[in-house]
Image (cartoon, rainbow, N blue to C red; front, top):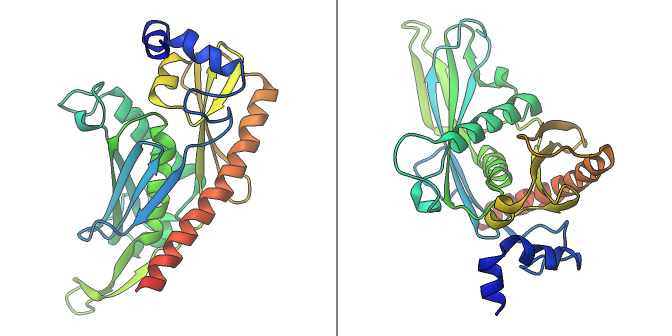
Length: 277
């Protein structure tokens, strides 16, 4: 009977739970799904991480390449994020070039990298005006059950913390770079941005970490990104109904709590990998 109700009237079905301050999967309104993390799982990448938030699964691989600095920023390297949402992750996506959602998500991740200063791009410069590192951060969603942005930011942050760059010296006679793959060092992570995504039901009820179904039934979406100093890095709200200042404040305080939880999780996983080595 419940299954029939759920299929015929999905919104009413969800409302019947929200009335009782809970959700169909048993969570409270401001409760995240179980989040798990693996790092270093792609041996061919310079850094990698696999994140699961409930069923939503994202893998991130980072490849570092030597490049010329951009003319306008001769003393900086650069970071290029890209998210792929293949048909494999959800029946909503079709094969072919990146769709609108993947492009918007890649742009959002680029904004987070820039505004949070997770890495200072000056650190990626090797020889001013001549040589720098470019970090290609490729993310792929393997299973899309809502809230892909939060999973992407965790995967990116964990992969950056797992990245080891080889030592590069410039040959004084030829001016050519020499790469020593045996000697590697980690990146200096300046800030630890973490996202918390929310959905609004019936313009009034706020829930965190929505599933794909909850996303499809909600009237507004919001992602808040904060760092370890509780600084607001990005507030991303693509359309939908407006949010009161009080509700926004509630989102921000939940996001800062989430940031602490995720930073602890990343540090714990990195520590356990070091211990295992």
